[in-house]
Length: 113
Image (cartoon, rainbow, N blue to C red; front, side, top):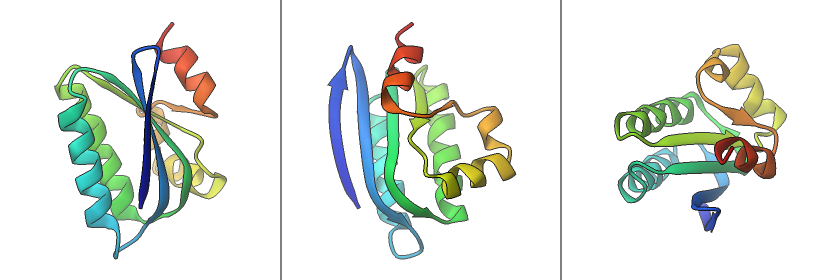
């Protein structure tokens, strides 16, 4: 899994590239756990444009990370989900409590408004 990090308007933007499956889910969890530690109390946009596959464990890891951000007075939003992955969020109704935006600029606009 690859990670690209940049900062725009005091918001950390993390672009993830790869697949979340059994062989990579521990790496994905460690990556998001480190993101919480490094960004406690901040706003983070997770750009998932490069995530081409995600299993149900990946969804659980995102939920766990989202909760940790809230507990630490931070905010995590997602953007650029591929249709198949967005469908997972819709079917499980996770899109009702996790902020998801169509693209990075839309997410940035919403979190800095």
